[in-house]
Image 1 (cartoon, one colour):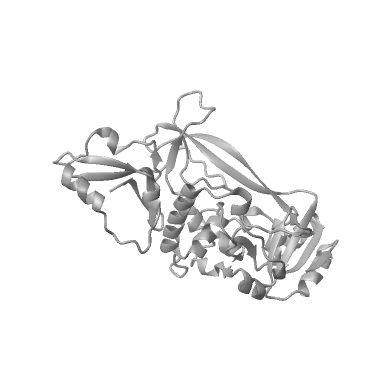
Image 2 (tube, rainbow, N blue to C red):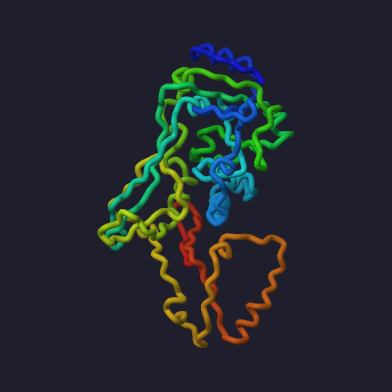
Length: 354
């Protein structure tokens, strides 16, 4: 791996021109090392995996892919792509085929803050919405641009071109960032053999190079919902009631069921009828199911039963048969509310019961 320091956007351009045109890039504002070598790891390794939330993300991501990108299918790779590029964690390391995109990330520092918005539901009842508002801002300091050998990376850890996520007439985030993935990585760093170069420079150098390539603001890399139907679908998922420590007025407070960072203002004074606010009501609390002639019972099950999968397992449930024989009727109820995007701007929302 070459160690290259540059002091101007012109010098950076010359260095990039000498690299293989099949190289992949990753930009960082911070440098991490292990045993004296660069350490590039997955978001799971940095922040851990929360299985229950991961199951939710995977199920919703698969549904979004089914709806908007049949070419990509619902493979684990493309599900992980959505998780990575829309704000969650994955077994993959994101990078780009564009040096300019990665230079932008090598010069802008990520931050986020929690906001609480007062608005109304579709019945004009007051609600408070908790959001994660994120931003990237230029900050003085040193940046780091890594170049990877695509062919070697493909052999060692695997690479995935996310161009299949392109949607006609739209500009999803993966297209805007010319995104690729390295991996899956299994609790390890990107192998050293994959590195071509580690380019260091003042962040202003990377910023100027990115600007020369037309990347001057966040919208260029993080398109708003009007341009990105995948983001629109994910932000259209239900809200779940939470207990907020600063809620002194007793007003219901909600958080997105899948809490992802937002880069654009999404405030609306009155929520549309397509926005679901789930306060945790359960059929089991009602004592019976409307329309049920024989009484029956309601069985609470964890949300993994709704979002999890068990490929190859025979669909044979002897315990269910025993319950039916004893109670005549059985309803299984999850603690979650689910929403699936069935077509552009339309959603089917249901309780997790069957």
